[in-house]
Image (cartoon, rainbow, N blue to C red; front, side):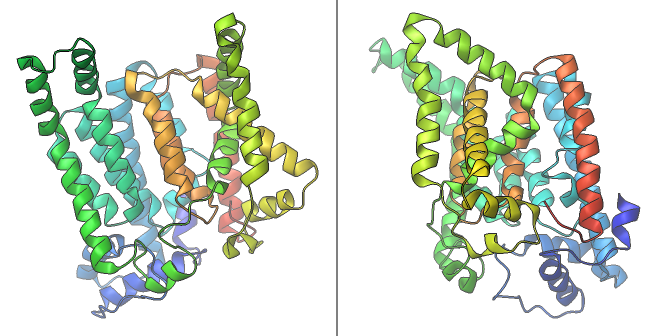
Length: 399
């Protein structure tokens, strides 16, 4: 893949990132204010590596991103080894071949570099090194500032055992107990670094005037507040397509739960999900009408109604119900789903890259569905990711 990517011409948004790095390498510190939506942390990082050698070609920039992909895989392996060591190698292979991420691991895009810092932060959180985790999340936000939501996720993840203890104490009416007060103090000791990281984001937001680094982009393509159901639907449908055997296992648990007389209400869940899709789903962003991307072609087909519209809604419904009934390796593992839905809903533009972090979190925190289900999933992803990368680098289409 690296040999393939090294000699290729720019694809998609690479031209913005690559040209910005070229400017920095040659001592021109002006920023493409009209185009650059991300804080230029990625560009400064690559410049620091390449500038001493006077290198500004696209190939070496892609090579550094590929090394970051390998580093991300190593950190993911360490995370999975700590949470569920039995399948750490296979889960890491699935991470590497995740279809929505694979090709971007070899392009001059910001997604994998930001993910590298995020995974490092998650590993630090697992080792109870919360100040280091918050610092690494600042690095992630300096590349993709919308990762601020995952700072909150890590804070909740780290604090969950203490929150459970406080809840139990409160339920026992121990408001004045020494144990309860000590729990609050311990909770503060854990969460304050994450709160400080969020505060840094708020300072940036106030200073810049918008979450998007480019004010022009914030007024047109990437406004601060434009929540939309499009990306949650896309995330859920993507999960249903890429994890069919795992979704089947989730639906089996749903069916078992629904067969109990106290669980009959659960059958309202798929009806509610499809109902929300029917009422709220629209394709509105102008970039989603660019048909050189495979996902945009699909979105336009869905927008025309007919069978594609029904299939998309059904996939999203299958994905949501299947994910709700997944099993996780830790008690608070389920938190990834509500945070993921909020994370992608914050973006008006429907984009496969936005599913990368949510699906990686799912891979890190879930219980495997079974050895053969996971092997078949990995085998299918190897083929699919290779095919998508081949078409991408040959400029036929991008996912």
